[in-house]
Each structure stands twice: as structure tokens, then as C-alpha cells.
Length: 183
Image 1 (spheres, rainbow, N blue to C red):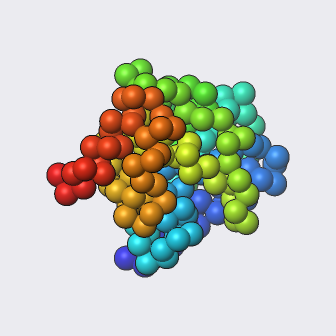
Image 2: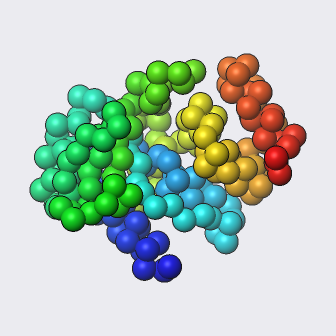
């Protein structure tokens, strides 16, 4: 189990270090961003994730692809997403997934993904801001997004007062999780 966690971390650090070195703007999103925020207040509460999600501007995709491919990643277009497999024999779960900044991830989503500038340097990589991450998770609202939100609620990163920051639909989703965390 520890090896699997370390492989994801290495993939994250390898990809972000290459993007940093090339001057490509990005932000770490998804489960790794949730884990980074959770660890900032409760290190033992972090969950592991199997992939890496990186937010990029579409205008930077070509540069990012060149950089990532130069360090061994293999570019694929899968289910409407750009992914970079961690080598030619890698499975889809062993990948860096690209989320396009300023675009809807799915047509039915309420809002677009944030811009890469809504992030901060946390030493090893650029991390999406907490508010933008919460908005993305509330927008997607799949089961794993709900669990990520519950983790952030549990450690006190977010609470009911956060509903004022979002649209009515997203605020209702947050309140639903706060009211029925075990549902």
C-alpha cells in the first residue's frame, strides 16, 4: 500500500517540477489538492488518491504536453479529457489528468473550472486555492467529491458559513453534506 501512495506522489512531483521548470502555469487540483489542504490542519486525516489532477489553461496545453512527454509521460485523449499516462505500459489510473481552466468539466456543470492563477506555491507545487477547490468539488458532486468535502468539513477547513460564497445550487449541496454527513 505504501508503494502505491508513493508512486502517486512521485508522479505528482515529477509532473509539477517539469511544468515549473518550463514556466508553464498550472495548479494541482482534485484529490491531491484536498489531501494537501487537509494535511495543513490535520495530517492524520488525509486520504490517498490514485491519480493526479492538474489545472491548465488550454493555451498552455501544447507546451505542457511537450514538457510532460519529454519526461516519459504518454499523451492520450480519453473520455473527452487530456491525460498523460505514466509511461507506455501505464494504465489509465496511473495518469496525470488535465482539467482545463475556465472551461466546464462537464456540460451539465453549474460553473467553469477556476483559473490557474487562483493558486499558491506551497513549496513542492502550486496548489489550487481552498475556495476554488471547494467550488469545483461542489460543482462535480460525485460520491468521491462529496467524501472529499466531508473530509474538509470534518477537519474544520469549511463550514456552513461557506455557503454564502457560492451560488444557491452549490450552497444547497454544501448544506446537504453538513446536515446529513452520514447519508
